[in-house]
Structures are given as C-alpha cells and as structure tokens.
Amino acid sequence: MIIERPSLPPPAASVYAFSLQPAVGQPDGQAHSSESPGPAEGMPRRNFLTALAVLPAALPVAAEVQADPMFELIETHRFANAAHLAAIDEAARLEKAEGGDWGHLTDKPSQDENDPFDVLLGAAATTLPGLLAKLAYLRAIADGKTAWMLEDRDGVALKLIDSFAASLKNVGLS
Image 1 (tube, rainbow, N blue to C red):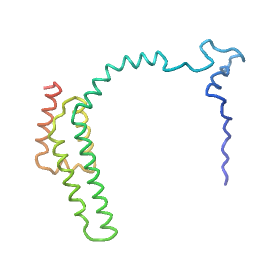
Image 2 (image 1 turned 135 degrees about the vertical axis):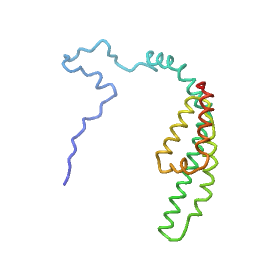
Image 3 (image 1 turned 60 degrees about the horizontal axis):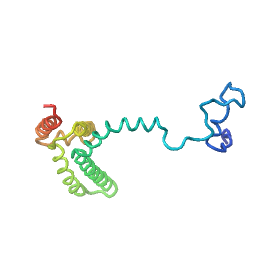
C-alpha cells in the first residue's frame, strides 16, 4: 500500500515572500503602513530595552547559583551515582549471561558514591537556590529506585536536620 503525501507549496523566493502578500480580505497592491520591504537591522529596540531591564534582576540569581557549592556537590554525586547504577546493571547483565557472582564489580563504584553522598547530606547551602536544589535532588532520590540511600544509612536524618538548619541560617531565614 502506498501512502501519498500532499505536495508542499514551492519554497518562497525569500523569507519575506509571504509577509509581502496582501492580507486576507485586503485588496491586491495595498500594503499596510507597518510593513517594510526588508528586515530591520540588528536587535529590535524594544527587545533590547526589555533585555536590559531584566538583566539586573537575573545577575544576582546567576551569581548565587555559581557561588553556592551545593550545585557542584549535587553534580558530583549525580555522576558517582550514575557510575554506581551502571556497575549494578553490568553486574546483573553478566550474572544473567554468564552466571556466577559479579557483585564485586559494584564495590568500587559504591565506595566512590558514598563519600560524595555523605558530603552532600551534611553540606549547608549558602543560597536559597542552592537550598531548593538540594531539597529537589534529595526528593528525587527519595521518590526513585535509590531511596534506600536515605532510608538505610545510619545518621542520615541528623545530618539532614543539621545541614538544613545551617542552610536556613545561611540564607537569612533563621
């Protein structure tokens, strides 16, 4: 069975070909006073002024995000966690394909993940965006297949309480 596709209109001679056509219901040859024969050069003034108005508000947030070490701690753990999960998957694949116990493949990746996770748990955010990022990241862990990292480790609750109390103090909410 052959499915025929509708043919497309021929490509316009330029990107302005459609904009120079009369509007629906407008007599041929009558152009709007707002239409110009070509594009304006550079960024439109209105867009430029809008960008300038938003810039001062965006700069402190961008600086806070870069200044808070929490973002680096999250990324470091995310990378170590991905390596650990990949090792678990590989060990499972090898056990299924070749038999035997391949659990030793996960030992080093597991150890490599533990240290960054412990640091992340105990670290205080220095900015509100950092604190919110830590909360969101830990929530994703709690909701995911690695929830055991929060449930099965000794001292997690106290580390989190202390780190969140320090974070709130750092952001001026204590």
